[in-house]
Length: 304
Image (cartoon, rainbow, N blue to C red; front, side, top):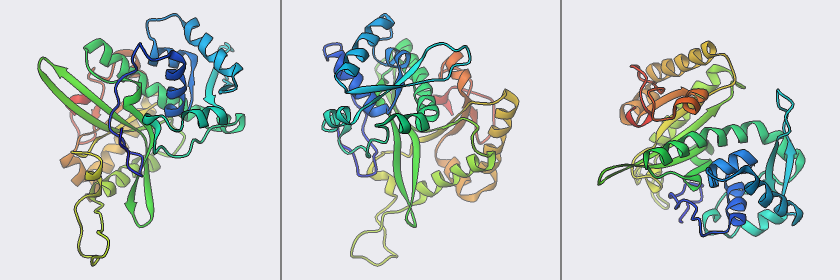
């Protein structure tokens, strides 16, 4: 795999059943930062019993390569989130898949407790895409979802996408490669702050590379072309509130798309859509549950 300093990456093959599950678990935790036992099972061995993943995790914990933090469940059931220890980070940092990744942010119980809700929600948003791909015979696995991808947008500022998705839709002999920036919103920020993220994506779309040693009026084209053949679509996945409130937030995203000139230009060039997390969990991302931010009826994310 090749990776730019910004953290963007090319898609990687799905885990092979010939690879040791122990290594796959470590790699998944290094890439996704944190996951529950159930999430790891859905990622790596969806048709295997839960105990298989649990045994591997417990052995890795005994070897002091992973640790866990308890989760607060409404039904008071016993659930934990797993993350790498410093020894686990050192063991995985040179894996080809992980070269060039930003510094690992979760290596202690305190850091884990602070990052757990959002990190697990981002993993949760990934799993329906992987399940859909398996069902439809498409290509998308745990290594095709890269969290926390950063890009410069000029003036010393960066845009950090919650994830970049790589997905290959297969229809007969035709292979359609799709990419998307994914923003996962748990209703922890104001609706206006959420909508402002569209401006950052528009700034990334318009940001141009300044060649070294040339006058500032000269550029070498959009910076994003260093990592993507076409600008990825932008997908918002919302959760954490009543449906009516989430629908209002989607309406605010549509208003920003219509009213801000930079975002309107972006919308003419790349698909923008939003959905509710529970809808893609219940119906799949390929169902008509995505609202185009430019208006129109809900549709599959691939048809935005």
